[in-house]
Every structure is written in structure tokens, then in C-alpha cells.
Image 1 (cartoon, rainbow, N blue to C red):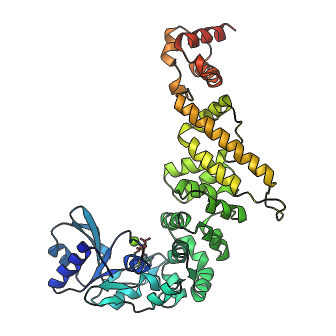
Image 2 (cartoon, rainbow, N blue to C red):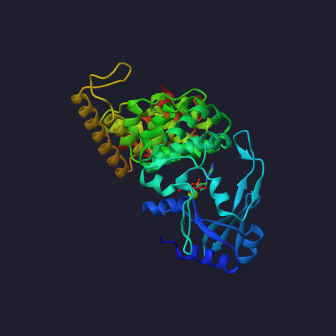
Length: 419
Ligand code: ATP
Ligand code: MG
């Protein structure tokens, strides 16, 4: 197994000081699979204090859990002391962690066999729980008794689905049974941790594995009101580009309203950017835009230039994933010709959008040739609000961009006031 020079150096340095150290977890799994690990975690018999003593530059990342980050050049490596997780409270946190000098004890506390392997150049791969076999058979299996492991930390249930979607693996029968049985305990898990695992699932190579949320009764235990995941959802997830906002829009597309999308994402404590973008895309997903320049300019103004291109991408996936008629009851389907029409129309809108942007046509108030100050200076601020007047002018310019000229607009404003 090949490991980066810096990781090798860390393991060697710890060894020189009389401690064991191994690369562990995801990086070992990914390397065996021929995937590029995101980061390299090291597990060691050295205490956090020893690690801090041995390396010049360290950061106390999670010292109470035994994790210190060692900085080499500008790269950070998490070094965690072998540990045994104490009894778990509320399917959430271990009450306390105990450090140990036994690698096997540390591997035992890990979630899945494929995540419980360690490696160092001296000992080779340490695989005490059949991780390699499960990698070969493409299986997600808990270390030890699945039910107990999910009782310790219910997030592992969702992690099982996440890893299965990332790797295209199947969840082993006992692990599956336990997941289903303990699904209600997911209610106790923090929304942030759930969000992180769900997002990894949604942007994975197999986003359609979200159907496991229903198969394993996780849906109703994650969301206050379960989300609708049907054939259509799965198809759109598979068709749409792998982008977090687009994939979440696909997942929530059957929820239909911006308010509902917002509520769901807020519930999962998403960041404002994601909530804003997904809910706006949801809002406009089903809106048809007429293929003429004026309509497209109005649509850009209404929908927002920042998400317009993304919306066209979402709509394309939405149409492409529409099932043809006849379909089962409850699923909306269309004729083949109708779908082709919709896609053609969308292509036309896209072309028009590109030329509008290229021309620099005015599509928002900030591009209007007059502003609030111009209106005041021209003595037109009395009566109707300035905002109303500007909206009136913008409407004219959206219809015809050649109108976007200062004197012309002030004249138009004056006329409007007089009427
Ligand atoms: P990724 O490539 O997504 O980071 P990973 O396997 O590194 O995958 P992490 O969440 O970074 O996953 O966790 C690192 C390792 O820590 C895991 O491989 C696993 O051994 C262990 N681990 C993480 N979370 C848990 C958990 N909730 N319960 C038990 N072990 C866990
Ligand atoms: Mg990791």
C-alpha cells in the first residue's frame, strides 16, 4: 500500500519515540479501493501530550477526544490516540473516552468493517474484522453486533446508507435489520450531523440510494413530515449534474413549494446560501418561460440572474426525467413528443438568455439608466413612491432595452406622473 511521504514521516517519528502509529479508517479503505483518500488520519498509542511534544507545530483539534492536528508545511494531519468510547448517552455521545495502548480496542469502536482497518509500513494492513473481504464483496457491515453499534450512535444508521451510496455497496442483512429497528433513535441525533451525512449521500455517485430512506424507515424519523421520494425523484437525481444545490432541488422536487423546501432545509440547519438557492429553484422549477427575448428578460429579472442558468439546468433534468405515458397512478407522465417540445423550448430559452447576458441588456433595477436620486432631482418623487416609478421604468426596459437611456426614461417618468 502506498501512503504519502508526510504520513510515513509522522508514523516513523512516533515510532522513533517508542509509540505505535497507523494510518486508519477512510484513507486505508479508499487506498485499497484505488480511490484517492480525502485526508489521512493517523491513530497512535501516544497520548495527545506526547504527540504535541514530538511535533513542532500542532493544533488542539479535539484534545478531549484525543485528537491533535500535526501541521507539516501547510498540510494538517489528524492524529488520534487509541481510544475506547465509554458508554453512550442518548444514542449520541460517549459519556467519556478512555485512551488505550491497544490498537484492536481502537478499531473495535469504529462503525463498519471497511472503516476499521489500519496500515503502517512495518505491520502492513491490520484487518481484524474482515474489512477486506467486505470490500471485495461490496458490503457495508457493522463491526460487532449491529444493533448494539446503532444503539451507541444512531448516526451510524445514516452513515451506512451514505457509504453504500458513495461506494455502490449493499448493506448486509443483520446491519439492515438493525438499522430498520433502530430508525426511530435517529430523532435524537443533531440536525447538523444528519445534514452532513445526507448531503454526502445526495452528492454521491448513487444518489438514487436515497430510496433506502424509505426502505429502512429513516425518512419519517429524519424529517418532521416525511419527504416524498418517488420514481420521479430518483430519476431526476440521476439525471441532474452532481452539484449540491441541484441535487437537493431534485430530492425535494415533489415537495413543490419554496416554503416547504425552506422548512425542510431550515430544519436540517442548512446554511442560508443552500436554503435560498434550493428554495428558489424549487419555486420556479415548473414555471414555463416563453421563448422570446422580452419574456426571457422579464423571467431573469423575476427569478434572479444569479440562479437563472442553474434553473435552466434543473428544468432540463426535470423534463428529461419525466416518465412517458402511460405511467402508474399518482405519477405525472407526458407523451414523448411533448417532452421533446419542452426540451426544445428550453434550449431556445437558454440561447436567448445567453444573448441577453452577452448584450448586457438591463435585467435588474441596478442596471437601469436612472436611479432613485435621478427621480428626486427631476422633482418626480412626489405622489407615487420612487420604487413604483422605477419598477414602471424597468418594465419598459425589460420589454425593449433600447429604452434604457437616461433622458428617455426621465421623460417616460414625467409622462407617467402626468397620467
Ligand atoms: P470520508 O472519506 O467521507 O471522510 P471516512 O471513513 O474518513 O470517510 P469520517 O467520517 O471522516 O469517515 O470518519 C473517519 C473514521 O472514523 C471512519 O472511517 C471510522 O473508522 C470512524 N468513525 C467516524 N464516525 C464514526 C461513528 N459515528 N461511529 C464509529 N466510528 C466512526
Ligand atoms: Mg474522513
